[in-house]
Image (tube, rainbow, N blue to C red; front, side, top):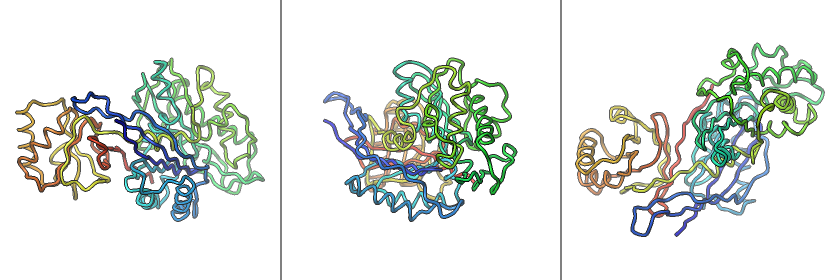
Length: 439
């Protein structure tokens, strides 16, 4: 028997803000007398908002009140009450994540946008969501080809290397269409600090198309380096964001593009069409080595990240789960990999228990060790299918009044944060995220 869950995705980017609402259909793939095996069977987009310019009070401040009005109006336009939303993600991306009030705006929107919605940011997650939302992961899974997906937005380019339908590495470069803002008369109104020593012009100076295209070609050289199509690394290292990972693309990789700039790769736009360097960046990509071999445009371009957030951020745990006295939803639980780290937290956290499922004696001993070291509430995530048995063993030792949560089949690492929603049948919707704000 299937159940449905409504999910929201909100992407507050450097240039644009978008929102989608989607329906996730959840099916139990196990037989009637087997351990439940719930999976998200299908995803259907119910509503796509128009693309809004991200409202700013000034270059360093996001206009939180204006964003709330946008979200409120889009819920009304969709005809779906906020209270009906069960999961999803709000992400703040690109240069917008570097704004002084980004964290406060994100958390305010999280509370505003539904009972169980994630407030999250970080280039790893953005890369994953964009690759899924653009269809690059699906393309790799169907064809068996290795794909390097590039989501090129207003402030950053999020990269994901995909092998056999699995994302194996991510990275992020400070390359995007809104690194320059240009008035209709060619006067610069904004120059991003990341262009220091790459661009000699300053705010107030005048530029022409040739000069902007020259800058775009320089930036594209870094993308070629990231794709293994150009030797050298100094430029690449300069433009890689501080918290981003690194990847090495193989020589036979298929390039995939999404983001607002992707719309300018195959369709020539006037150079001042958007008041930035996006059209010239698209032109430079089309003329570069990135488009000399096999490449594809995403099924979604400018909407790839928001569709990833709305349709692909939620997971289910799991085949076995245990919970007692837990007040759902749980939000922003820090993930740790040792009991010592758990005891140092100011509040509750989630302890990761690695390894395969244990036998009864192993589970009993683990429960004994955990209850001797940590205080309630007890939140545990296991790799193997033993969450229910472990939860029962913990309850026997701690009693029925203690808050206990044990989940399984969720990939977590120290430094992640976890949100857990109310049960859907025998499973729990969970979202893993990293709260990263650049300065």
